[in-house]
Length: 477
Picture (cartoon, rainbow, N blue to C red):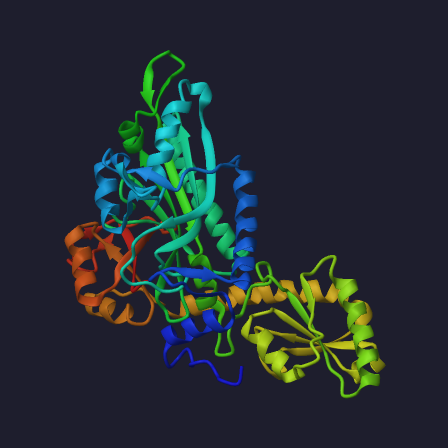
């Protein structure tokens, strides 16, 4: 803990890696590109899971589990899908010491295997809709990896839904995007832009891809969740048919949607500072830590008794930890819990005990600015109220940061400059060559076409031709 982190302003990438490792969220696995998610990172992921799972079930979804291994022939049934994923596939060719009759792909995503099963399960319109979600891991053989943001194996959820009509499927894709946006804003305290992907950026095999896009602390974009309207592409590939109310055979309409442990990376990069993690209270594994302070044995007994009372009073409503480790100084503990991003520190010393109070230190406001005193008797109400304030302030701070680094350029040169400092929202004609020019000359891509934009017309920021939509251009992870 004596060694300081690399400042974010000096080297954001180095800072990020140091925070993830030193806060013990994850570590590098022996297989290149893979990671071990440590207990602190797993606890954070579990809270993310709970926040999402609750929302999924409120929309009528159930959880299921599908196989990790998928026959290679399944990927060949949907041409665009196999073309998109072929470079990333990990393939098993030997099992039990013998060559397999058919190679097996380690799932990069589950549209194919789930489509195969849906074809068996669906016969009539009465079987629809099917609303299923799966929690698990997938493998994509990435060449350039970074903990949580892009790894060969990562953990996620993937939803796969089936409907009788296109309208139902399109509404579902938008509904699940809204679920992600609600989670990002209200639980992760991350402002996001809801939008549609361009044709070149959409999911392989989708008709339409939707995403939520967030700005990180280095002003780059991160795709934080996606939802896809797959049309009848996978239904035709896997023969997912049903008899409609007129007893006529129809192909079904499907969607898929997913959010991964990349969200942990987003939380680190949006809220973290030069002292380490800053976790939003709703997701923090430990929301408040009690640090007792004493000089001698007489003070120790008195202070620990008060600390125990505080923990007992709070533990019914707050995820609280009492740090009573003897071998470590209070200063070391302060630095440790700051690195781990615990939203609120409760300090109790001999003078606090005498005065019947504690000192509250907010993680999002380091130093004297974030410290205040509160009577011990009022903590049951005061601590949850302060956690709510921290949650809200983190969101507002992230929103102000994004707005400060979002521009609306009117010329191509202004666009080139804008994407070096954040988001550029500008008119786009929809042509691939204009999109490709921006990417080639600036490394920025179209992150999405925002769903929430005023209708109108303008001139494409690249070619000057007529445009009916604005797009978000940014450099991205």
